[in-house]
Length: 456
Ligand SMILES: Cc1cc2nc3c(=O)[nH]c(=O)nc-3n(C[C@H](O)[C@H](O)[C@H](O)COP(=O)(O)OP(=O)(O)OC[C@H]3O[C@@H](n4cnc5c(N)ncnc54)[C@H](O)[C@@H]3O)c2cc1C
Image (cartoon, rainbow, N blue to C red; front, side):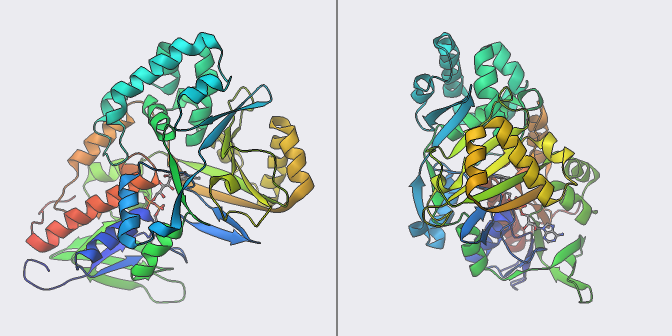
């Protein structure tokens, strides 16, 4: 109910996890919502496609037990029965061997033989740092607490606090989880990834988009609705959108949640304050290209993912064994594997067609892991290339302090509220939390009428 007692719709733009969580929370409170989505399906970067019985999670794949707000959303949607705790064995390749460790057992790193015993003091220093800083590395935060740690690169931290072995065989491959390399990456990402992997994992049976599909089923999502502009007007917002073959649509609403990647949000909302637009336009997303292989025989590997240090291969970052992540990713007896690159490779090969990308990936496998290359080539059933232009955010030192200042400078009373992964640590749970925050602000605006006169 708004300040004058009438019900007005709230428009949410973007049906990713951020936008749909915002819409769902508003709907739970009795507000009429509408979600506009450019693609022909909801889900954004939490989406799955099926080919020949293989379920390919197109972006998010790994979910962590301490994704508290996601667990709560799963409960509120009544879909707890579709989740389970999963295998969390991570491998790191060194000298042709896979060193395996369970993510929630830091002592496995010692036992795995990945590092020499001389690195034990470095392991203890890292554990001490994680103990000291762990409470600042939260999936539900606006990164304000982490900003104080954001003073150096992961490479500089490894030099200062760890040792060369640790730098090359742990910090470097962990950076590949962000499609990146330690000299380019804030230490916050590395520290964040350690407690993230020092945890139990969970997942949905069959496909990760069980969550976004459940949200979409409860919400009025208009697909193939590409929003072209969102503007503030007296007493509300006006949203322009188009769909192929139809005249342009214009709708008015009490408020809007814009849940899009930052640069897209900047393009669509030219009326936001210049400093806001400048920040949004320059969110440093990097692209990703990764390749799925369905094979008709399971390789002899128990890890969910194997990370590649650059000393093993300069471009290949991670190979996931999706069938080990959770059930239902591949038909019975078959396997689904995915090869991810560090982002400069994706930039170099962005224009290559899918056939070429698959061919190049076979070649990379032959260099990096010949036994696996032979297995895939002998048993390949299917290959599929996925590309994301705005995949994940490359955060350099100082970026989290800028993010904290940006978040704190946003106007909570603006009728256009922002949500999305760029407002937090770039991952599903954090993105979901930005949606919940945007919903709270919009709820305040429409129920109390506390709207700012200026621009957001
Ligand atoms: C390869 C990859 C692997 C990842 N792995 C993990 C992982 O293992 N675990 C994890 O937690 N996170 C992971 N992430 C990050 C996670 O997927 C994202 O942070 C999160 O899904 C982002 O959600 P979002 O709602 O903010 O954005 P999105 O999901 O991108 O949603 C934005 C939506 O807006 C729509 N849209 C765009 N333009 C318009 C327009 N003009 N009009 C209307 N709609 C529009 C898009 O189609 C999209 O549906 C990964 C990301 C990638 C790319």
